[in-house]
Image 1: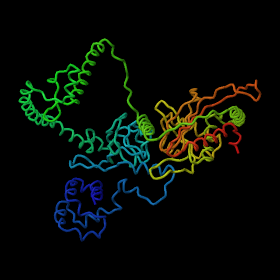
Image 2: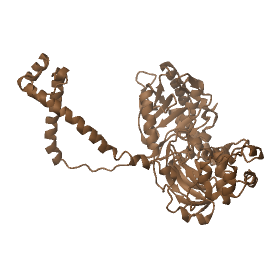
Image 3: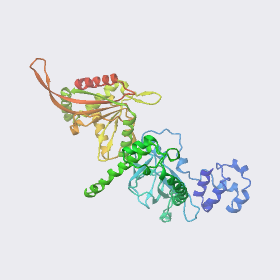
Image 4: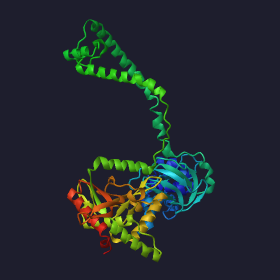
Amino acid sequence: MVYASRIIITHTKKLKHVSTLLRREHAAAVRGFSNSTQPSLTGREDMLKTRLNYSPAERLSKCSARDVPMPSGISTMSTRPMTGPTFFREYISSQMRSVRGFSSSSDLPPHQEIGMPSLSPTMTEGNIARWLKKEGDKVAPGEVLCEVETDKATVEMECMEEGYLAKIVKEEGAKEIQVGEVIAITVEEEEDIQKFKDYTPSSGTPPAAPEAKPAPSPPKEEKVEKPASAPEAKTSQPSSAPSEDRIFASPLAKKLAEDSNVPLSSIKGTGPEGRIVKADVEEFLASRGKETTAKPSKPTDSKVPALDYVDIPHTQIRKVTASRLAFSKQTIPHYYLTVDTCVDKLMGLRSQLNSFQEASGGKRISVNDLVIKAAALALRKVPQCNSSWTDEYIRQFSNVNINVAVQTENGLYVPVVKDADKKGLSKIGEEVRFLAQKAKENSLKPEDYEGGTFTVSNLGGPFGIKQFCAVINPPQAAILAIGSAEKRVVAGRGPDQFNVASYMSVTLSCDHRVIDGAIGAEWLKAFKGYIETPESMLL
């Protein structure tokens, strides 16, 4: 009923100046835009007729449902199936807080408050990375208004209705904007833009009121504390007089004070009736020790020059990485399994495949592509490692989706290669390069990094790290850390025979709630088999 009244206010020039009246009267005369509601129009008919110059039946006939443009929150309901980009656009549209704003003052025309949308399931706040429209520009459905930096990526925010961008409430670079908080104002008519030059959204005013109220509260607390402290002083004075003759203390407290050369008169007792106990003496000694250690530090601090530093603000991806990895280490019982794999045959197969790729004009296959393929096939052979933990059950996935850790200037991203066990090496390499480029451009979308079941992190090839232990990416149960390959001297078949071979160290981090040690070892055995006999990956 309230939504219907707002629609009439917005789109009927006759009723534009009486929004306060209808809200106060709960808009009882409007209910569904049908003639069936006419019998309920009692009690207020005469008043509304005299004020609006229309009878209730006339108003209903003039404001039929087909004549009133419905707001986006109502008009977007549809029974048509949505897939692909259309579904993603509709998801964003459903998350956007797009509220028709009204003012009791007649100088403000109908307008729309655009709120910060929820562009991912875990998003609670976002940053404005860049505005692609400026104030006064005409906007149409489907056009990009701005780029929003979410907790995982930078996503384009599209306009849902036609109009003009009258006011940008949150400027470019604004940070930590809560989901639903107003970021812009749009209007229907171009001549209404100037009326919102100094406009402040109604959603931003309520927080200011509570902040102003607590301000005078500290003096009230101080006034209460002063009389409370006065009686304490009065009660302590009479007790101090007899304390000059005798101080009540336990025998253990007296002995400890004597051994420490501390007068009992300088210690305040917390026992019954002000009696000094052992804990009081120990607390006094501890506080005095802190004071003595703090005093010599003052002259030394004055001699030491101040450190030169720069405070770097946290980005959204840095905040999410910190919280998720801290959660992982605090709640997941990690254990680690390391094995050395001979990669001589793997490197030989890679050289042969790359020669075919170059001859056909394709891209070269990297060692990381072969590692991803081997990990995916090992997960298909040992599906217990392709699982995640919940409080009620262990969920074992049928799809093998491999997240690949990608380091960028903005932070660490983990785009996903879906169904990696079913794809060829060239396809895997193509997707990894494409996703890595999008990660470096900070343009990953939620479908590019969500839905992974296992993660591979490679610090060997790019950085030469010999071996390391990676932190599990929740809610997954395992992550594989790839080290660098190095040549080693190994014993031959004969007593005096030695060979040189290239070995690569890999470490599997496992969630012990999901993967037992023997299961983790079985997975590493399968992975090592694919690496050392790479031809089997092509079968």
